Length: 429
Picture 1 (spheres, one colour):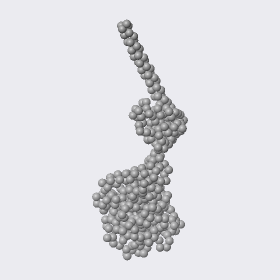
Picture 2 (cartoon, one colour):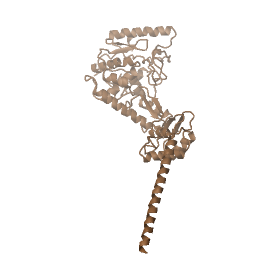
Picture 3 (cartoon, helix red, strand yellow):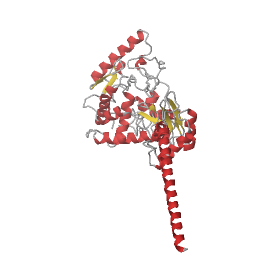
Picture 4 (cartoon, rainbow, N blue to C red):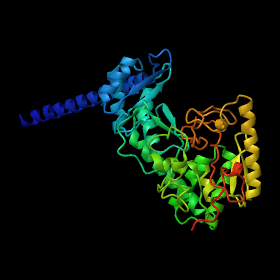
């Protein structure tokens, strides 16, 4: 009896093994079929008949994003999309054969989905984070408050800015961002770019400059930025101020008067008066020696470069030449001759009905192209010729420089010359 039971037990075990192998074989066939179907579904043309923009806001989870993609028509089935997404996460960034996916999450942003995009392509786009980039251009010469105001007004950005950065701490430029990016992130990028650029320029600066710190360099560059509208004149304009610093002469820059009065919070909104020139503010370079205590705006790359590596000149003066540029001179005699020529141009414009002599000055915003005339309100009695600071330039446009200042002339100068831009009688001590 025992000998008969043994074969039955062996036969049962073999049948179990045979069944197990059959099941595994069928499972492999099924898996292969599913894999083939998934690959085909991943590469099947999608439902979009034309390219479409899909905006994915921050904070949405993977399921919500899949639903949004389905509603927008970018994918046909959100469940199939989720299968491919989870497969991509499981395989460390590959969805059935190559869809690059960050295993952390689908990323917020604004994405352009091409016509007929496959599930694999949509997955690659949305997990890459490389969405459609918007951009904002920050012109040179804006104050930090003005830059913050511009960022607040940009509808493609979100979030609050913690605080207004110090003057001169931001680098004006064109910055790209994804829709919904945080405003503070843009501010942080602008500060980081300024630090990097200033470090490089300071390391390669002219060693003979009368500047002790990078902060002084930014202060000088900010004056150059406000005083010189034409890019090609910035280096020579910087040399004028550097030469004055070396000689102990006061810089006598009108934009420093304005900044001392309003602190970069707003435009002055009127011509400068004699009382403005005499105002005892920390920034008024008609009243203080050397540089102001800090920048008066955020200078651009060209002004920073010019301030740290100005050309070697003997120039001490510059005055408008009637074409939107300036005449640079190194002696008072030549300067007074240039001033007289400018007065002739002013009188000719008035006689021709060209408006106020200050018509060569640039309006605050928008700025005209170089050489354009913009009429301004004539100054009242006792007021100086209007000085309009170029604080709101149109990006990419040349801006005529502000009308030159008119400090007191030496005793030898005629009454008609006494308001031309010249230094004090003796170097300030």
